[in-house]
Length: 368
Image (cartoon, rainbow, N blue to C red; front, side, top):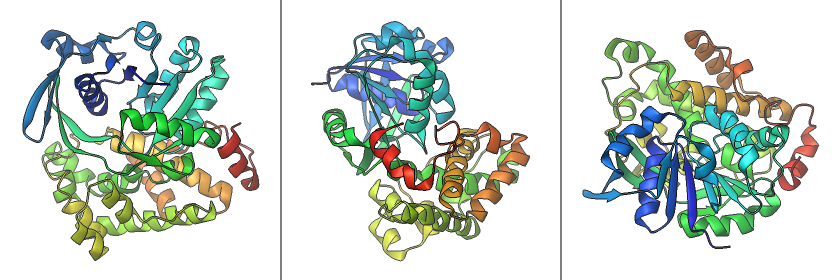
């Protein structure tokens, strides 16, 4: 079925980039944010300014609203472009309004996002027959540089995508490729979820730079200045533990540096060097991105609670040890005064509580 009408839920960096880009490409786009104040600059300007490769264009989405039902009514595709901490709210809000045949794309699913989203929809009583899939990361490396103005630094390349249940991956990914040609097939949603580069690199970078962030309000370049050789060593240790989980699941064991390179974030030379420090600190698309102004940021709340926590929980289910992940979860919980092991994305929230490790492949393929 052809995709023409698209709802974009979330008006942050990725949501505004998608809404503007897809509008300019001729899709009928409806943009939603539950915060009217977030949408106010777009209403005032009458649209979204998109900057890419030095060119400025102005996009006027078909409909912009903080009221969800008219945004998702009768659309072909619903793009979820929000932090993972908002998935629970959106799944509960969407459940009564989903229609048969609609597709939902989590951009990204983070780690375990499709499992969580499906579990919440099921618990909320969603009756429609829909297709759900997720990508590894956002289709765009982008930032809101001013009100109603988004800049795309790079379009993500080789963007892996999988459906839940996995038996629908091939057909759904073919449809998503109509909208995002940079999407490629992944085996299942744990291949995408365990390739969560933000969860691999952001917690180490944030915790290693907490003093600098609090002292300067984030007045430094996060990737170029904040990722030092010592912090890169933490990231490499996280990656080794993640690869242990990947191998236990029988998935292709791609290193962080290879995923980073495939996404268009590292040079050939950096990848060839094998240095995570060099790959991140020299990343051209990320070079002008400043550090968060406060520790109260998605780089911890999302990338620990909805990145490291589900990775560590899946590892526990599989019998894989993750001491460095567990240490960073503990440090982040103390620094944020939040118990991420309880508040984050647990096996129970993903619908995997009590599941035996040998049953996991069947669930990934056929669903709950």
